[in-house]
Image 1 (tube, helix red, strand yellow):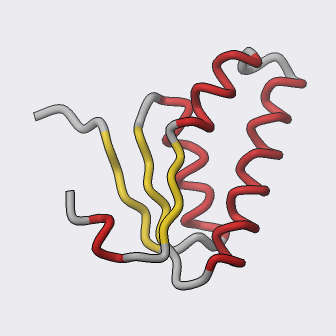
Image 2 (cartoon, rainbow, N blue to C red; image 1 turned 180 degrees about the vertical axis):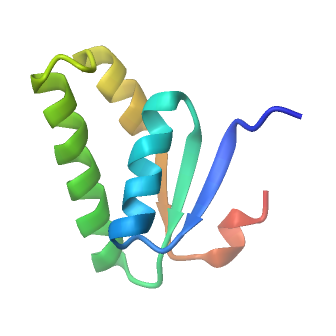
Length: 82
């Protein structure tokens, strides 16, 4: 069965990096952590890193928006049930 959606527990450096690597590859990714502030920092870091890929011409602006659209954030562990 092909994998289309992944869940990442922990939005720190490693978890954020996993999410950042997954979204340009086409995976819908839900990133979980206990606090909104942690998730906000992770989202901002991921967005900045994706934008750097656009600047370096490794990703088109359209593809970067598609990738960022595949990222979801949650503080509810039960959102990872699927």
